Length: 506
Image 1: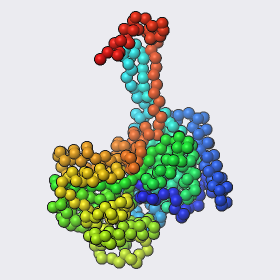
Image 2: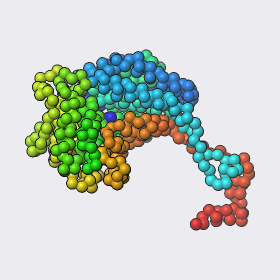
Image 3: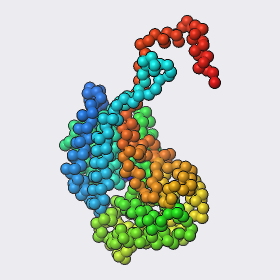
Image 4: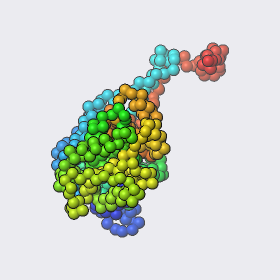
């Protein structure tokens, strides 16, 4: 659920820095140095506390998880109001579902399974050492301090959901939330400060300079959720200290509607996913392939579904606005570019409202039928309520098109899940994850890893996979007490040579 392309920590509109850097008011490089020094001081305190305390017991990890759950439960309405304010208007019911309930579900899942995750994982040893008492196992060890850079589109979810794996693994964390959602970032900084000691969790807020300095800190691991273009800078900065990174990015996630699909069901589910958060989701379906003979039926189904989901737009509390003027202009530019290049652009405005006069930045849903690749709508991740619809005569055309473009974060297939075609689409395309006969839903399954591939990301988290991402898998071998091992030490005997000879035989 990342930011759209070019969205980054470079927005000049930023909240006042949080508690860790709030005293740094001067201008110029000296102020930047002071900010970085303040953050480094927090990191050093967390590191020292981690070393002094040792790996936290399961009970302490559960306490960290419980405090996060309690914070979200007790301040749910405050967070929802803050997100609504930051977006101009954001559906409060959506925020309660995606950001509050979604985060709590991840935290509770980690708490439920934590005791089994932390157990040593037994591995086999070479024969006959196991028979003689040797043992091999993996012990999952906390890394230390994890840096988290979270985005604006799901500011609470993409801050608190990673905490499930971070806390379960026994780590401390420093968080840099987005300056695009200042009210939400301020609320998180203030409330987390009330619930956690700074040597457990610290939040630093601020603009691009703070984000850049944060990326340079010598964390034990860093999670960045955002745009591919910004991830390159984050990864470059992290490399200076050899900090391993998990990158949750985005891309143009395609949909393939099969001949075997129910077009009405597909239209409803695709548009519901597309218009959630006004399309400002990294996993939003970015364009849809439909069979040539079903194009008109799909367009009709998409229009019908949208009218049912959102009978009005302007004052509809369920319909979210685009986050700010910059992104509003960007999305409107896609529409203008498509029209100028001859595309069929269909606006879906059920109540025929005048959206040119509005308090916020709501954009009506649009379909763009058979766009060409020279249109910017087919080049950039859309991150808005626009759905390009492309047609194909053979499914191989859709597969080839997807494979000719950067690997996406998600891929969606509608059709017979038992068919040869279904298996071919899944096996002949590469994406971070897949949802069949719906969109986006795989991200909500806590027992599945969530992550991208190539330009859409690096590494994964959620559930046990998150626990492993934020842990060091320490390999441990315990030697047998039997003196049989003397055989492999000099002086080498005929018995040794016979043993080695058997190892190198076919």
